[in-house]
Length: 593
Image 1 (tube, rainbow, N blue to C red):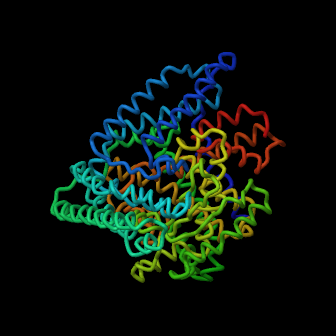
Image 2 (image 1 turned 90 degrees about the vertical axis):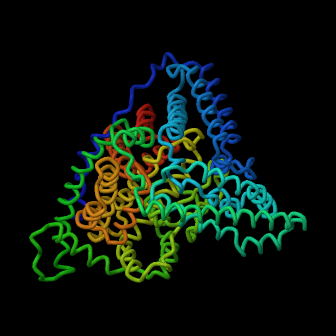
Image 3 (image 1 turned 90 degrees about the horizontal axis):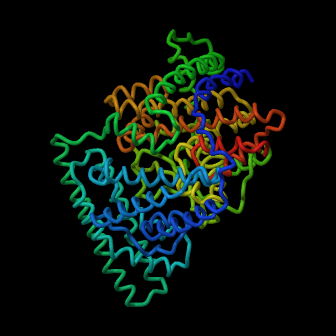
């Protein structure tokens, strides 16, 4: 088990730098009346959210407004602004020192969400320059896919939404000013995908449904109007693309000032983006040290007596390239993922790593067309806490439309070793398991207004949990592959920061991903595209992982012989999607668990 020992201390220096949470309020100041009032306020707040943001309500599993579709016009932005300001004023009436620790964290999360949304609307203003913000498929698609009611009911909800699609796209075209080329290209891809929702399959379901003849006729008219609206938006985008390609076009890079502001709202770690970037640079070097030792150990097995290059990165790459030769095929990629899930469930159960719930279904599916093209080849769509027993979808982007060379490059990246780690990350005990636990949290605020760095950080951390428990029989190949995968999260942070704040070029980013992070060409190219569509999100993996690993080591030291892997994992996951810094604070209050 030399490979395990080689890695064991590599990240601890970074993890120790994770933010220490702010001090809690003195226990003597906590007021029962204040806590009752705050609990009542959170219930009222959520009711207001459902009415103001019906798509958010649907995501949460509240289907009361499932027939509504938000039209993103100026009047809606004015209502949003008033909503945020009204609730920020109500929050100011609460004395945080009088609240319990859990409610105080909820207050922080609500405030961050309100301030973040207000900042996004008033300062960041992506609604003006990201045409990909507008995609009716994201509102329409889940109504058909999520079986929250009989099909006829859902079709009537769909019918009601269709009435607003033309106004939706009229508002989108009125909003767009100075868009980026990259977000315009993505908008074309995804809105063309949205048209697939409104095709022959839907028409067939309507025709065979229990809707009345009048409803079916209305459905046909609204369907035609909606298709025309989407086609009109795509034509508008294509004309915009021609102009942007002729130049000049707005840069997708947001600059250091906006980046730091967005990082503070999105990551909530207590450190700056610049500080995290410095930590990631140091961590990259530690990965190379550990990977070099393991690659040298594996060299004779895979490359025999061939001379080792003087460049240690070339040594690592050569061994990883040998491992990459073992992979599934493009037509079996999705089915291979589906077949691996039971083995992960079994391993977690046998090693008693954390609680699972077999009553919460996980379904592997082809990623819907309106979601494709963003550069994320796989994702999880989980139900909300108010419909927690519904299925979680593991979305897999199809490979059938890729050129043969791109498909082979993709499959070499997600080879037989790497694909297992992808499934740990996305499914068990990664996103699917974590979000299932979050839905059982007693605090709906922590689940609904949670933190992406905690969610992504857990998925990365869960990979380490599995390998430490012996997943893959401690094969050195598995550990080296995991190191490569973990290095990806580190390099995500570096390139995202440098692309957005330092004008890192495409060539430089690809060079770092391919030469220093050992990625295949297709993976690196798609990550560049993703980095041009998003900002800050790519830092969430490393920042969250580092904080969780630091917390685990602190808890191991604090609890001593009372520490257990399952106990830590279950307790950590019981706090919904709260930022790690606040979970750390809450866990420290409990002597044992």
